[in-house]
Amino acid sequence: METIRQFIADEDAVGVVEIILILVVLIGLVIIFKSQLTTLVNNIFNKITSQSSTI
Image (cartoon, rainbow, N blue to C red; front, side):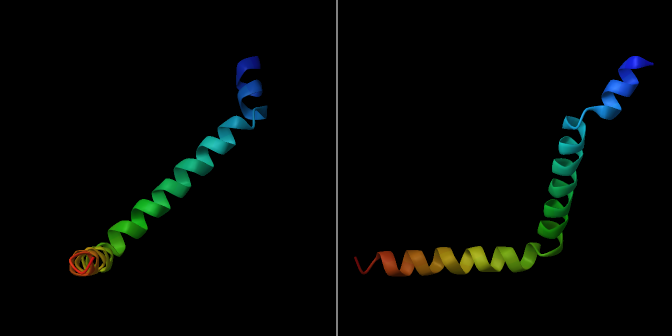
């Protein structure tokens, strides 16, 4: 019983839950905007490739 009280009083567990929630939100955003992110990254790499030939 005492260990349960210590666990509830321990604030480190709250930090872990916050990190997990942030990761879940970020993964959800990546899944939702996957096509837009793919297009953006492809455009950036295409621009890098085309401009690197001028150096």
